[in-house]
Image (cartoon, rainbow, N blue to C red; front, side):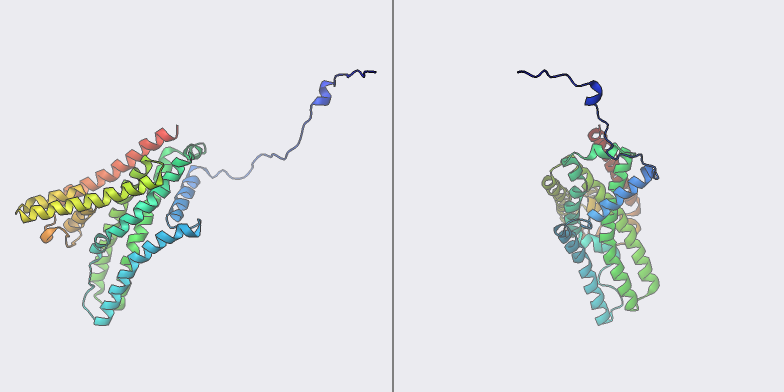
Length: 301
């Protein structure tokens, strides 16, 4: 005998479940806090802090490679009782520019490429943070990481020079000039590295591109400068230095910070030509910032 199924009432099919959602009544920290947090995490990530042990190996090795020569120079100065350091503060970063380029090539893609590859950039902009906040935080973090990398060995040199009882005024002046030089270098290199890295979400491509741009430009400019010197075109040497980031910094510090130029025969730019160098450096930094802003406006749509 068939049993007749009576339809359930509408009220019996409806259930209200309390799954524990509650309103947030805490403080709203806003854009400034979010930007500072992004800067802090990006800076820590540039040295592998807060990440796996494998991520710490390369940046820490490169940091040690930057500092060990400075410690050796201090030891030699103390042992031989020399009257000055073997290398000027302003020359240190230029001599070790290959290490700086390698660090930038490894960490600039890490700073921006992961967000592009995993498409997390729009998630940042879903919170109270603007495109300009994101770019400023990333730019400042990369520049700060480079400044730490380049200023730490200068601090080692300075402390060692004072322990060796070298002239306090001369060492302080040289140290200050060196800090200005590496600060400018950090801003310029950070901008170039981030722009190149933001073009592609592929980290490997970003690493290769950064190395190629920095090393090939420096090698090509240095070679052409030597050729110009051998041909007797000394006036062209300073102008050729405008076409490489490393020689740009060399020219600025030679013209205004009392540095000895690495150009052939020390043919660095004069003060007048140095003004052009400063303008080009500042224009490149501003141009890199603008390029990053345009890139992330498109990505964040």
